[in-house]
Image 1: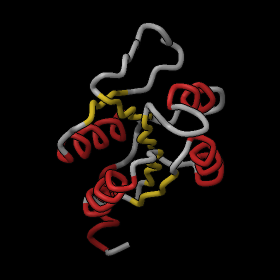
Image 2: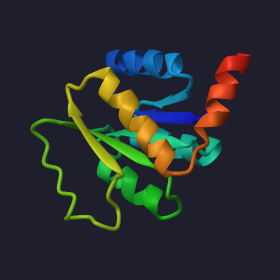
Image 3: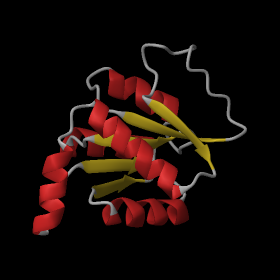
Image 4: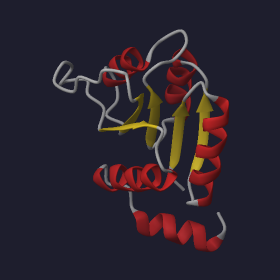
Length: 134
């Protein structure tokens, strides 16, 4: 079962994301700030990270910079509509995709699936794990 690390400080949003991802067959870890997110990434080696742009302690772009020093894990960056996201400004550190808040959960689940497929996750294994109740 693929593991997704959600680094987001808005608890209500995290609960909805967690519920929807688990219903789609994913294991979910959560960090409420950038430093804890980096620690969980190091400890659990998730298959994908959903990363909020604005976080306490370390903001999303700094977390992404640090992640990219040692990892190529797919990252879906969540942004507020008003936040400036300059994909050309940090080309070597860019996330794999961006999703502006508010967003439909179906869009989030779809993008997670696409990013995992691109990274080589075997969705047949996910289907088998879901079918067997793992």
